[in-house]
Image (cartoon, rainbow, N blue to C red; front, side, top):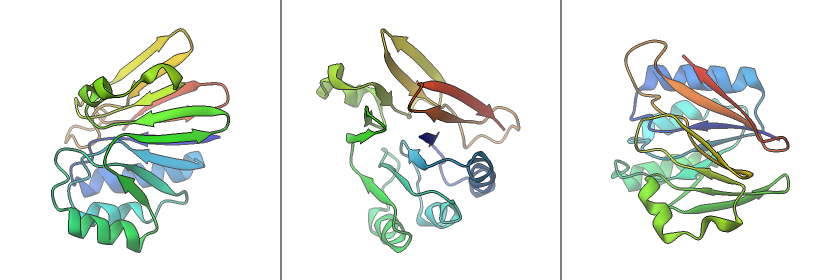
Length: 161
């Protein structure tokens, strides 16, 4: 199972359109957004994904009524963190701010996903992966990134755009 991971899109619609193209071209099974979508029109752009999207809300996702309406309209699934998932024999937890992990017992997870810092993070401790894809709302081409994770092998690819 291949999942796309994106964070901190902050309503940069041009970048979101590019992210949709990338994920659709990579034939991902699911897309996880680790928060800071910001506005409903961003969710509308992500409706062009060929895969279902789910994720968590971030600290800048304050327009919850319109965000929730767009999420429902496009049959996506977002909650306040943490989001716990079990796919392909792997247990995942998704938060926005890595400080939210302080209230989570992370020992039972194979994959920990977060955003918030806008800094790419790839850490393997034993067989547990912690990943933040980094910035995806920046204005400088080549400095934005998303992640592609194979859940079976735990192989991770960071894609810059």
